[in-house]
Every structure is written in C-alpha cells, then in structure tokens.
Image (cartoon, rainbow, N blue to C red):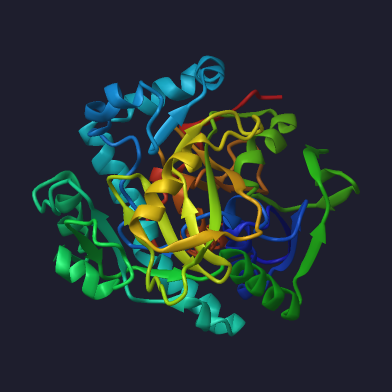
Amino acid sequence: MTGSITVLGAGSVGVGTALHLQQRGWNVTLVDKAKPASETSFGNAGVINASSFLPLNNHTLWKSLPRYLRNNQPQIRYSWARVLAEFPWLFYFLRYANSRATQETSAALNQLCSEALNEHRAFMQRAGNMHRLTQNGWLKVLRQSKGFDPNGLEGRLFEQFGVGVQPLTAEEVYELEPSLNRIFSGGYLLTDSASVNNPFALINEYVNQFSIDGGTVVETDVRSVSFDGSQFTLHGDNLLHTENLVVAAGPWSADVLKPLGYRAMLGVERGYHQHFHPQDGAQLNRTVYDLDAGYIMAPMEAGIRITSGVELARRDAPTNTAQLEQVIPRAYEAFPLSGPTKDPIWRGARPTFPDSRPVIDKAPAHENLWLAFGHQHIGLMSGPITGKLLAQVISGEKTDIDLNPFKASRWIRHSGR
C-alpha cells in the first residue's frame, strides 16, 4: 500500500515517520508551523542511549515524593495550577508508579531505545552527517551518593536488557574527563550510548535529504483538523487536504485531534537549557549527568549545554527558570565555565502520557489516520525507530516489535461523532 500522505509535525518523530514512509514509496508531505526541530526536539541533551527506558514514575518515586512535595528540587518542580486543572493525569501518573508498571513500561521502551542508535545511523548515512555522532558513552557522576548498585532497580534492568555499564572510581572519572573539577567521588559509564552535537541541525539535515529525494515540506500553522468522510483538511494559514494523515505534533497533538472528536489524556513535562562557554583549554568529551545536583551538561556546537529537570506546568504557562537558575551554580562547581553564550534560554514541553509510553498506532475511529506522539524524554532518540514502526503499520507490513504497549486506546477516546 502506497500513495500520498501528510505528516503533521516536523520534530524527530514526524521526520522519522516521513523518511520511512518515503523509503517505502509514499508521496509524503511534511507539515509544521516552523522550521523542523524548532520546538521539543530542539532542546535535549543530545543523547542516543539504550538505557533511557526507565520511566520517571517508576516505583522508587514514592521514596522521593516527600522531598519533591517541597517543590524546591532541581529534578522535579510543579505548578499547583497544573495539578488542579489536570488532576486525572497526575492521579494515573502516580498510579503507574508501581513495580509491575515499571517493569512493563521499561520493557516496552527498551524495544525503542535498543534500536534507536541503529536507525539514527541509517539516517545519518543517508544524509551524510555522521560527523555529528560521538560514540563514547554517557557518563553519570556522583558527589556524595553511593556508587552504581548492580542490585538496585536500574542495575537489575540494565542486566535484564543487556545494557553495558562500567562502574568508575573518582580517578577513573577524571581519566575520562580530565577537565572536570575534583568534586566527584565516582560514577559509571553507559558504554553503549552515543550523542549528537546539534539536535536541531541533525533533524534539519535529515529533512534536507528528504526534500532532495522528492519529499514536500510545508511551513504553515495548523490549528485544527476536520474530516468530511473522504479526506482530512488541515486548517491554519492555508487549507491543506489529504486522504491519509499522521499526527506527530508532540504536545500540540491533542489540540489538533480535538475537532475530530478525540480526547487524549496528554500532559507535558517542561524543560529548559542554556549554553555556556568553556574556559580556555577546558573540554568536555561526552555528555555528563551530575546525579546529585540534578542537571546534565552536554558538549554542543553552540557550547556546553546545561539542561534542567522536569517542570510539571501547563504547556503555555509563563517561563519559570527557577530550576535552571538552581543548577547553573552547581555546573560551575563541576566544570570550568566562563559564562553564558548569546543564545537565549530555551524552554520546551515534552508530551507525556500517564504511563510514560508514547502512542504509536492507527487512530481508533478513522481509517486513514495514524498517531505518533507522547515520547516524553526520548523523542529525539526514538524518532527514527518510531517512524519505522508506524510506516510498517501504515504500509501493511509486519512490525519489527509488538506495538500493543503503545496502543492509542490506552489514553485516547473518541466521542463517536
């Protein structure tokens, strides 16, 4: 089965879907309101990591919950307005913080994470931008916490799913990253991990190759979608018509689907980042997660990117940089930084369902409508593998993995109109 199809959303997931459909002979139009990867896919640590399957709402969350309720932690902050307005989402988010759900979600996400690097490599070979990839692991460092525990939740899951991990003493940490300040007691290296030096450029280079190969890119602000029984109409700056549609619009997906009668229990986890200049001679070789201080620093083309933790707030609520301001002094403690670059602080919203799994599925009530969103923190890395799986569904192929854990019916309902 091939033909013409429109993909709404030009982040990593939408672009990954468009490329895989194009490879299968579809005539693909990619639509977004801005340049590709300008929103959620723009801001992240750039990590492509087989170990990113552990959900934020795993069952160990309950031990940390009293500390998080103080609402002053760098890892998680929340808005009371969001809590009250979207209490059902929070209720189910906490309900899934149990050992059974943690195992099921980790196993499901592992299917995406374990193939993410292979699919990115294939796209990079096609686009000729393999130079953006560094494959030297992801370093997690500790200040006072105990070292890596192979018998803890993370350690047991790493062993179950075959994730390569190397425990490190303090001296071994500094052998890997000589420019780090001597404040760490140890850490561990996720040996199978890789990173990219500019997520925005990476996705746009994928899109450039998509265009060279005959794909169409349309920049227009689509605010809703209607269906007349035979085709979909995308309403925005211009009217676009299509018989086949993929919605991969990240945190805007629920808004787009609402006029079609769908209700999605989709929340967002907001985040921030800022770029800094390293001091002369200081160099960061890989992405580093300062576990005790609650931030990640990543070497990017634009400088050292410092990322904040999770902010549970409304998608379009005013910017609140409190978490970022809290961790920046800790980053100065850890690495020789000379000051921020001229780049503005980035704020984005990561789309999240209560069980921390995305939807990768055909829509429940429309024959030629497919959905791919809700990837929370793994959207950049899992975009290409998600695109492959959805393209297999759309094209009538057998999927590489079982997609039942990602069914739309978990959190998306149709009114029947």
